[in-house]
Length: 82
Image 1 (cartoon, rainbow, N blue to C red):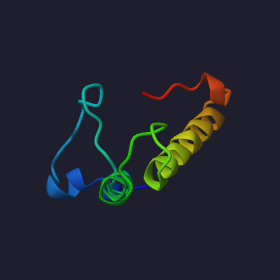
Image 2: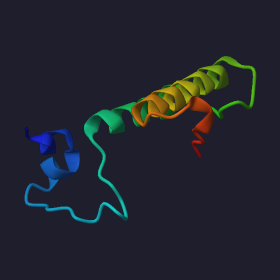
Image 3: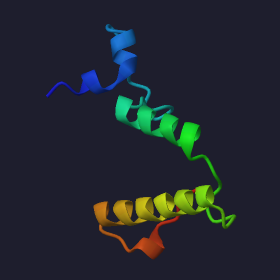
Image 4: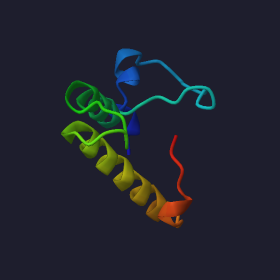
């Protein structure tokens, strides 16, 4: 499979061979799109309010904890995302 097509950095730098992932990992366009969407439409602190945006952010945060816990075969309460 050609995974490079998912990463805009390689489209913009076609001859790039990136080996510095320990310092900075490149982001696939799906992640960039999701982050952009969050900042443009849903940006709020997690667990610090009772208004709609913070409730949505908290819900997504907790869902991410569950998803990651399942992926690494851990309990949700073992997950600390910071």
